[in-house]
Picture 1: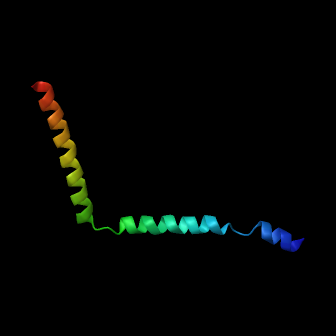
Picture 2: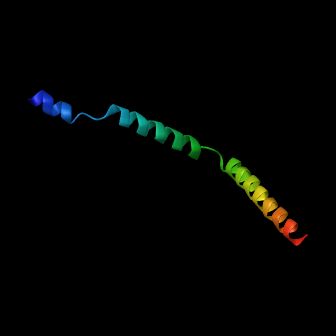
Length: 61
């Protein structure tokens, strides 16, 4: 009875492994240098504004 009770409160190890995996990836993402993130953001912004400009130009012509 006591063993069964203890067993029912044992942690779900798959859940723990999944949480550790998520935390590891969050840590990896946060450890990317700020300069690298700025470069990615600038590339994204440039592509976004270029796309908007091309749409605007096609509407005006």
